[in-house]
Image 1 (cartoon, rainbow, N blue to C red):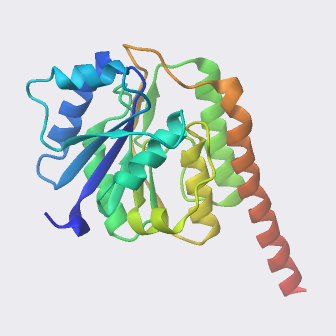
Image 2 (image 1 turned 45 degrees about the vertical axis):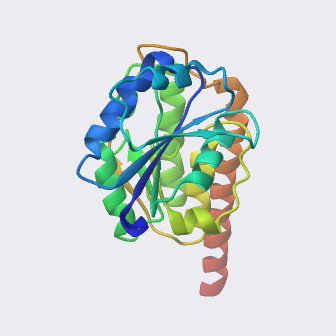
Length: 247
């Protein structure tokens, strides 16, 4: 198995025992024809996700568990997964079955065609979102569409954490996020600022039916907004520079 064609799927978990078996089955089935590894990244040994995996008689051989020793929380769990991943393409997805793993091969193909970041996009033609709190859905859609309009960033969906990254980009980029899923927006903005290719594929996000979401809108909104402003300020500086060059 060549690392140059290996897709690493990073799944941060926190007591996802009710969901994890179905999740890894679906990811494995979606990638059955492709070299891959599935990294389940956890914070503590008492996480019921681990017990569910231990009891899984048909657990795919491609599943590995990764203990997050960097710090508690989703961002650190994903960062631990990035460090452990061996593939040339790294995809983050959630264990709650909200993301369709059948889209992962298309995301990986776009990365191998030259993109640094590929978004699973709910808001591009062909994508959609089913369920979830109205306020969260509205703010997410507005953030994605206004950021694209204000900056020209090459995705309609800047906040979805269902995202693919090139190993080369991840290895060269310092991650600053310490808390939650704002990490996806940070990496997308940093790729865009560097002039790297960003792409997207349509996806359908479906609200979880089991377990409890770890998303905390009021807590994480300022973190998302920080990276939103970084992108807008960079776009304004570029426009100002072009304006000065033309005078």
